Amino acid sequence: MFRVASALSALILSVSAATAQQVDFDGELRVGATSLNGGEGIGAADLIMGFDFFRTVPLGAELGFYGFAGKAGRPHETYAALTWNDTWRVGFTRSAYDTVLISTFDHTAPRVGSDRVEYTRALATVEPIRRGAVPWGASYTGTLGQTTFVASAHHASKGDFTAVAFAVEREWENFTLAGAVEGVWADIVTTDGVNAKIGGTYDLGSTRLGLAYLHPGANARPDTLALDVAYSPLQGLDLLAFSELSLDDKDDAFGVAADFILRDSTSWIVSATETRQGTAFHVTLEQRF
Image 1 (cartoon, rainbow, N blue to C red):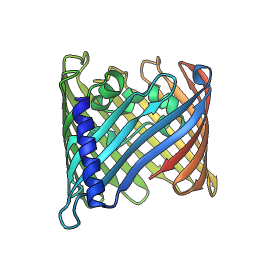
Image 2: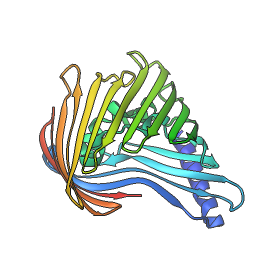
Image 3: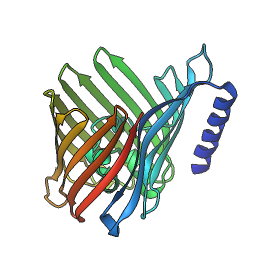
């Protein structure tokens, strides 16, 4: 399956070069350092690039990557898919479950985020990262007014699982509500075979509040309450406090961070976290697309 994904990626890149179409990027790149594991550098990416093959026909392609690089290796998921009208995607696609309510630790402390992917990511993402599966499938993205919805289906021979996911997000002037569910059919699942999450953010201007309830059952993790607060005391600086509180009290995580916004798309983030690995400090340069 990895060879198939690599071949599809090479084909897409060669066609893009031949047609010389504009390439668009969406996501984040992060590099930094952490005091965990005696100190190490860390790289992280959650990035997709897309382009159309033709100027008059909405047929295109996407290549993407979600993963981490550090002392522990390079666990990752790779995306390569054909697209139609930026709506339909067929190939090695991102799960709909991953389009909403992602852990704040991914943004503020990527090394901690790499240890906690099971809490907010799909099993269709966790299995490639943890065990090298390469699920293929299809997805559909639609909008209805201020509501965005995504549906996807995936199957992997390695890992022997099939997953179907649905996500929805609704925006109001100061409030955003989102939810997602993933159903999994696989021999590897020892719990209820369902991941689900629901949450929202409320923007008060200089203060933003976030709350989410996570049920990562298919990923064999306990139900968890995610809380975060962001406060902007002055332009170009966000102060954050965030936590993920597992209902069994065995895998709680806490953090505080200062996000120095250099420009709209670039930040330096300094953070401290407390997890079952102990207290740690992190510094991260984040580039957003």
